[in-house]
Length: 391
View (cartoon, rainbow, N blue to C red):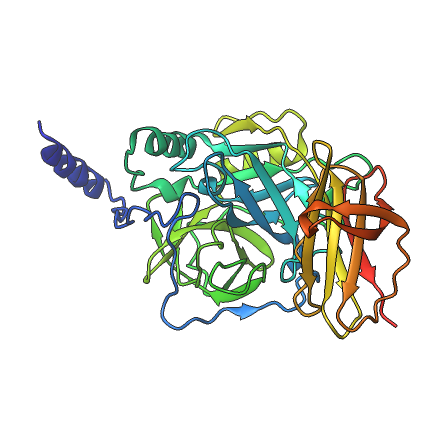
C-alpha cells in the first residue's frame, strides 16, 4: 500500500468515527537567519509601543540574547518570567537550526529601554529545557539540512533558568511572575488576546504590544492568530485575561502561529519552575557554562557630548578610547570581567568637572597621558551607572 492510499483510508476512518478532520495547512517555518523564523505583519501594523516597560505586568517580559559559536552576531527573542528564575520562550530561540551545538551564552534583560537598563540588571542563563521533539528536529536541520516538520509549531517551546548570581536577588522574587494556564481547545476561540515582544523592525530594545485574536486551530496544539509580529518577537507571550496561553513561533502575512500551553506542557513547566531536579519526559535539559560581566553605563549632564577613555584588566591591562557619549543616545553597556578599572572624560566646552589623579599613557591615543579616575565596582556582579557632572 502506498502512502496516498494509506492517507485516504485513515481519512475515511477518521470521518466515519465522527471526529473532526484536523487541518494540515501549517506552512513550513521559513528561516530568515540562523536563530529566528520568519514572521510578518498581518494587514495594517497595529502594534503600539510600551513607553514605560518597567511597570507591571510589562516588566515580566524581557529581551533574550543568544550567541552561538560561529555566528557573526547574536540573535534576539522575547521571553516571559513564569517562575522565580525561569523564563518561557520558543525552542528555536535557544537551539539553532543552522549552528550545530549549544549556545555559548543566553542572557535576559527584563524590560530594557533603548539599550539601557539600570533598574533590572542583566541575567545569565545556567541551563535550559527544550521540547525533545523540537530539539531533534532542529538538530537534524542543522546537521543534515532536513526540513523542519510541518507540525514544528506544535512543539516550539523552551524554558530557560537564570539562577541568581551571588549577592543578587532572584529575578522572579524581584519582579514577580506571569501566570500560565493550558489553552482550552473545547472553548470558543478567544476574541481578545494580547502579545508583547521586542521586534527587530522597531528601535532597538523597545517593547511593543498588539491586541489580537485567535482565528483558528491547527493540528493538535498550534493556534492561528492575527497578532502582528516580527523577528525578535519569537517567544513572545500570548496572554488571555492576564495569563499566558502560548508563545509566538512562526508566521506568514495571514497567520501568526502560537505554540499553545497544553495540560502536558503545563505539568512539566510547573516541575521545571518549582523543582531543583524536575522530572521531565517531554522536555530535554541542557547545561550552560555562564560567564557573567559587570556592565557599565555612562551618563552625563553636559550640553556638549562627553568623550571618555577606559583602562581595564584583560590579559594584562587594555585601554579603550575614545568613546563619545551623547546624552540623548547613551553608550550601551560596556562589559568587564573584573571589578576594577580606570576612566577619563572630557568634553568640547570644557565644562566637565574632573579630578582624576592616576596618570596613564594610553597607547591607542598616540601615547596620550591622562589623569584617570579609579573605580571599584565591588564583589557583586551587576550593572552600574557612572555619571559625569558638568559645571
